[in-house]
Image (cartoon, rainbow, N blue to C red):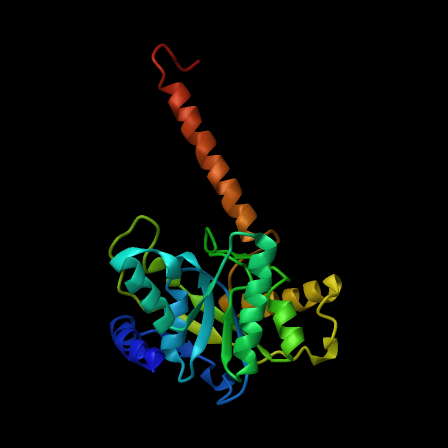
Length: 247
């Protein structure tokens, strides 16, 4: 009930204001469990995708969104529950991964749609990064549910970092044909199989999105970008010290 109310309250205005275009809606099954594996460009991805679907899709979100104290915290928790997000404690990497897998399996066992971002975090520069095999592939093989590749298009341009007001423009969503991994059933603990499944899904997402693919994890790319920014800042500070002159 809460999901339906929030979808009307949020999804309706989103569709009217931004008019997202969609290709491949026929690839979403009318009923039954399925995994929606999407690239991740923006915080808004988890809102635009559910807005264009007739069925409920559940994503996982940081537990902090649900546990922040105060009025603002309670409103935030209600908002995320209302749009179909589940809390996962990410304080420990292994524990977080297991919690995400269990949450995904619970959703699929109910015959619902489970949404997941194989990259594990938002792309720092609009490119597509290597998928993490621990979540998507394990959930797919343990559940037997089909994996539907999804490409979000231009959502990162709506509200770039540092911008308060979103830009009114049309993002896009391309939904690919379901991928069947039943040939690997029962092999969810084989790391080579997990990598093969993940890479196949990422390849389909790349074809749908047209993104440049980078064969490293997005978390590593973010770390490199952060370190480079710190080094540049330190170099500027050194250059601007009194008595320092260019040679």
